[in-house]
Amino acid sequence: MSEPNSADFALIKIKTADGPPVVKTLICGIEGVTINRTAQTNETYRRDCAKPNRPGTRKLRVTGSSWSIGGTGSDNIDLEEEMTDAFGVRKEYDIELYRDDGTDAGDLMGTYAGTALMTTRNQTYSQDASGTAEVTLEGEGALIWTAAA
Image (cartoon, rainbow, N blue to C red; front, side, top):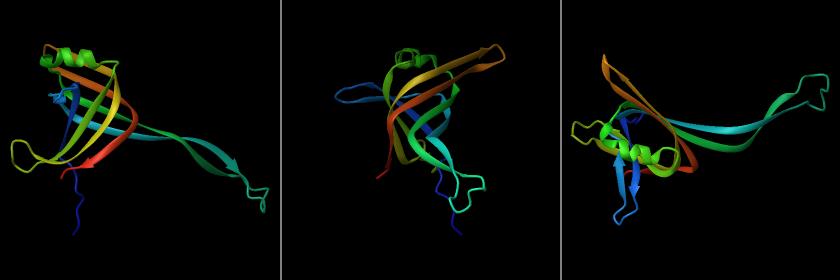
């Protein structure tokens, strides 16, 4: 039987210094990660010339593509400065995918990398629960996948 090779967890890292060396800071606390890709399209309906009385069928034309990353988890005040600096600013991000192999670090499967703008940064606090955080990263250009060596 064949099974999918799926990641067990993902981590988001943000480039915080050019270096050398380049510094990428883990957005510690963000534990749920969603990667969204969208193809923008235009649609037209074309009739079959041999059957002009029949409704046309839809034809799609891809006009562009986009990607975004959503992250949810615990708020982390230790990263307040880095998160404030990143909000509304183009930054480089890595999204690392891991397999749970029983070690402290996990087994890195590969990394998505791209430039994105943090467009959403929500923080929620309640007396009855720990603080939570939610971020949205809207990508520019390509989201590049590199498999782990």
